[in-house]
Length: 475
Image 1: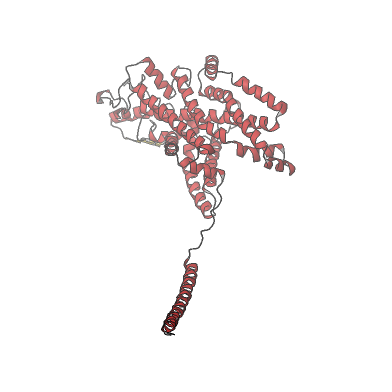
Image 2: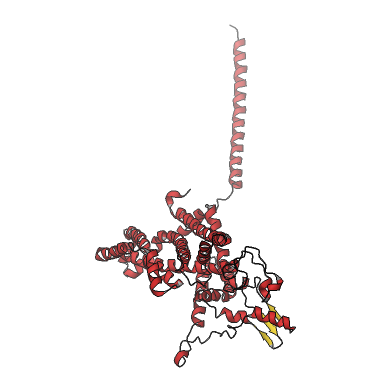
């Protein structure tokens, strides 16, 4: 009856149709834009990074160790401590590098380097002789190994072993006997003899200067020797002898840390005492680590009767009081640094053996040991090639603590007067003088501070190594 609504409906329908077409077109455009966006996103997406190489156990340990700042700083402080011990003759000595008079020029310092008074000094002097050739070879080797892609840990290990081999080789070379007749049989064949051992060059130089004769000498920065006495006895730090009392050309040098009962310079004796402390610590610890690791590995691997016998031996060794045993042997044989090293090394391996035995028992039950046996590997190869590299962690953690304990033991024995010889420069010997003379405070403060500093460094390194190797403490 009224067609208007139909036309309106058609218009609305046409509008809806147009709207639908427009919506379809917009959807198509949106799809095209989305497709283009996805395509451009695929083109501009960054490439995935290459897979990181897997880290070895020691790489993980090193990363964890670096998180402990105190341990890391202590580890770096060990370098200057060793360099101080190695370069002690370059820093302080009363032997001139060059001594020139009207009669000619001689080089006493180099002669003394191969003929020191103490065998411990000879070992460190050989480390000094081989240091610069080793340094040059190490730089070349490190550059070559880095280009070849060798890991830094492996390069460092090879460099350290190479330096140790140089030191041992030089010691053997300059102690090689000449096989001469009679008493000349054990005389070193290649070591230059010290023809000037009986001469006191600062005194000779002073006398020649008083006579007006020509003399010129070049000394180390501190021209004082560790066993050189003087008239300045029990003088405080900073003391300098008056010119009217001079008898040697090095009497002008101030005693920065004071003097002891013989007028010997405390600073020089502290520098050379570093050699004795490090020698006792590392030789004794190296000895009982070797014994404990081998016996613990054998006991843990074979088990049975072998394990029972070694465990009983461990229990017996743990009963020995190391300190009193050293006192007994010193009373029988006399004071010697070698007795201290030997007794500490032969009586302290029980704890290392127990730790190693426990680790080997755990490693023995893992499948790689059974696979090595199935391939026909010998017992020695399985123990030393496969098991021990994975079982050394407890022993390595105990090593820094052992060095600190050995240093304290040597200082305690020297404090009692039964450690090293009385003339040898030792931190404990200075403490003994302070114990006898309480008014001379520098004889207590200086060596006690050095012992505290050194022992703290090794304890912090050991603590950091323990935390780094313990997966429960990793962050």
